[in-house]
Length: 153
Image (cartoon, rainbow, N blue to C red; front, side):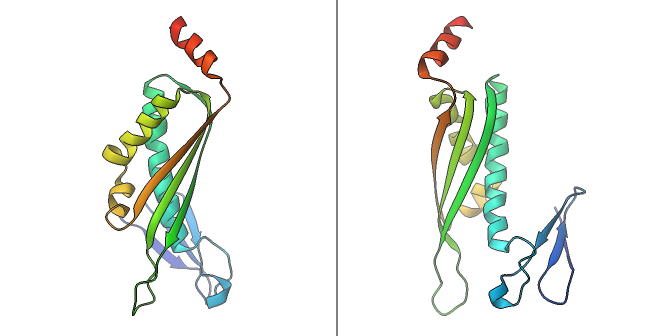
């Protein structure tokens, strides 16, 4: 895997691209001279983690033929400064999954567990130095509707 960053301006704005045709704008904060024209590098790490696990969870749920009307992941991270440096790596990360559709809680939890323990390479990369936790909200279908649908199948 390889990516390339190309400087856009005389400050810290870059266009990054990889093997796909898509590009991402990256920039520094205005506090250090950036123009706020892109996401911050540490935000990209959280976005990568969220994207990696979201793809896994959706794939697992689709294999079970579950209907997902909407799927969102909110990722929050707490950073801690390393003494004697300017580095502030993530030490705690929480992923909040929001699923709307006919998805039983236990199946969603199992899909998340599989992502975290077996499939998501971003989790494997970040978990040695950060505690990664998750929460889950399922909306749109009552438990009685789920049970009735399960019995009908």
